[in-house]
Length: 341
Image (cartoon, helix red, strand yellow):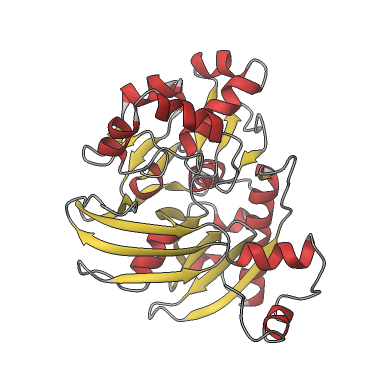
């Protein structure tokens, strides 16, 4: 009888792998940071292959650290940095451009254009989201418009889009899916009907042929393919759960009843509240998303986001160079009486 669950946590600044036992205890874990790419002011990218390799290395290191027999792993679940956008060649699996990260602001002008066209209500009523460069839809459009030949290939069905969980599931199993929670962060997904909104895809110029199949957050999507370097012993293990990191945290903090909320502190800081089985529209600029669908029941959430939390600490360390390690920020902050407003 398989004794463990393997969780892949693919975050904005690092990839983690954690193995849990049947009681939910952590047996072992491993983590790898990877490079942040800043081509221009306000632009943020990742190398999709670096995302993949850092995640696979974390899995290999985790299994080794716990001396786990891979045959004891019952299934794999994935949680991920959301909205980050990857387009790749369906035949070769090769990315056509770097991943455009959720923090990237390069499509702000396009989003302003959509607002000027009076599309805010149309987009919000279907997707639960405000028009913003944060979400995947405008990032897909940017790659299609700016990488030579990609739009034509996408229209021929040769290019696939995915957020990070889609990319990892496809690389592990060969299956092209996205869970409802991640799909609801693209600005292309109808959160009421739980399907892609073809009209919005048309407005944003995104061919529907490149989109993954939306699926519930808990089901068997596929099994690990043979021949993945370092993961040969995991061949046949099912990949059977996925959700974006913030929805995963809401679930992980057991916010199962409407009105229960969590706040988490990572690259950014995010407050989510369970609002039950019907979407609730915010009067204060919060976002409405699918939290999860399990056993046929859909749960929705309201969300407020602070984009830069831990990433600010990392920037002070790696880019500005005023601290040499993250904990030094506490000492530095304590050297002044207050923040001066």
